[in-house]
Image 1: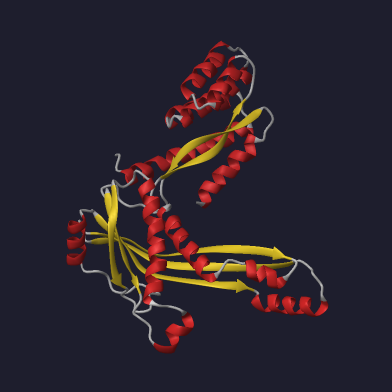
Image 2 (image 1 turned 180 degrees about the horizontal axis):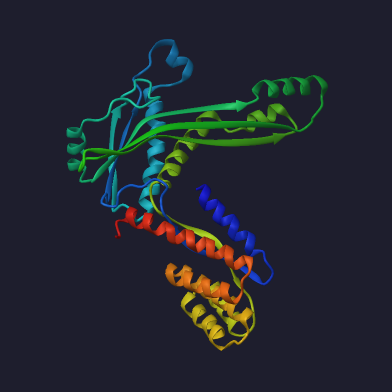
Length: 343
């Protein structure tokens, strides 16, 4: 995701250049974590249910088997819903629940036997098992001591100065992907997610009262942990900002077509400018726009050819920046094709 944010910021940077107009296009990016393309269907297993606590510990921590099941279930609900939105897997299923290998569900325990994995895959008709091996959440108020002091001070002095209360929820999850075909664990790692809430008020007591409740915070962070992890294992389409050169005549008409995502006609208009103009600057701008049109159509090789032509005619920084974006997108294609098994 950091790489994606970098590209978006770079796009916005040169979109602000004079003579350029920003526009959004849909771009498919490969997943950060590669699941082999031959895995077309995947089963989700909740193996994170900690052994039941007993006595005073369970009472103090509020950690109960029912609570563990609910929160880990929210994580897997976010995971499943996000995976189902992608065409990467033809089927996402299997809602089996097992007790965690680690009795506290805080770290990886022993691996599942391959006979069990194989039988589960056959029963659910899936190619692999994605297992949530452990899951732990926590919610805390940041600087609770200072907030309490402010509250007491306000009550005693009658002063209503602005107070900010911050709460943070964390989730730690351990995921494994079991591939029975090769009897190999193709992924095993710890995944962490954090979410924060800020509330400001002229009353510390009011701010504390308005801060999200612990139960709601844990449910939200659990669900979003599943969503965030899923977005790391499937190629997803994102709306990213690009830019094109404005102009008159066919340059303007091409821009109008681009605005309504009619990229084929936009390319026709801009190509007419490129072929008819004798001015190198205008030809370079037209070639730049044509490259954008081909990127929007996912024809990256043609896009790269045209941006190279643009730089020859109009060697400016914004053209070179766009060439860098296209080059990186082309480098991503091999990884994307392997993930989608399109070789």
